[in-house]
Image (cartoon, rainbow, N blue to C red; front, side, top):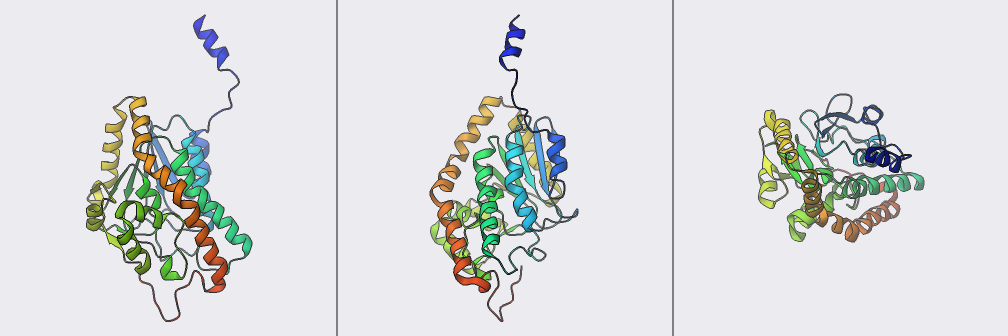
Length: 278
């Protein structure tokens, strides 16, 4: 009788996202696998290192909503493919003549990319950074961040004549401090893995061949604790990110959008004669 009452009480609920459906939906951007409540989300582009495009930039914020709203996901592992976290050499999302509508769409996608992760994914998160690349803001905002020896963290926005603001500069300020962050934002100088460990940006440096296995070891350790402990611990350790996003992210992103309007065709390109080396 009690079971029948409970069933009736919870009847009519809107269904949650189905893993098979959203794994297929985002397959051009992420390879997903799940075991025992642990979801691994591996970024890729055509099976190789992830390349940032307008389409992939748009996919992030939507994916977080579905991943975060699936109660079967208890721990999240985020990693990349190949030797780069993001292959900046092949990414062309910043190099085109933008219209006002383009900037508006990019602004919305950038906002949801970070906001939906910080506020929409309520489970422990582990990033396994598999190499160098920009746009490590989500990796750095994870509860635990491990990386390979050759990982490098950098924000190239100012070097390509754009104000920072889409989240990378925010994570630098939170983790390495105001003065260090300002230097790396202005110069675009990369933070290598050893520096990142010293600055408190990453938790461990792991041999490449052990990177994903180590992420799963950490996830398995977390899963051995009860659900309430897992979720409330995540709530505690992610609280500084929630506060930082509320306090600073809208201003930074709005400043970036304003710079794009003000500088027009000069934005998104390095000054003439300067060659960027990723």
